[in-house]
Image (tube, rainbow, N blue to C red; front, side, top):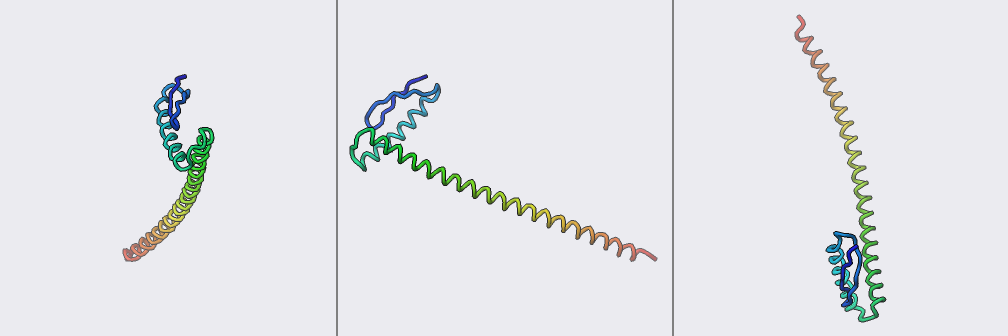
Length: 119
């Protein structure tokens, strides 16, 4: 299992990851370090452990918000799919009704044509 050296808040850490995931781990560490730096600039130096905890909590809050938004979008999609299904069913009923009317009209036209053609 490869070890990747990452820097967070000016400190070096060695983190193990799966083979092939080294670059992704570096990218994630850089993103996390940026968040930690922003947080550190707003709250000052509060100690590494507390700063990392606060950054983790902020990210967890954002993740929970994203999950809630995603769940809401899934509900909206389900609702739209149900409305689409209702619309398709209504359309199918309308098509059936139109087909029946056309068949009745064809029968009437054939009846009229037969009477006109009769001597």
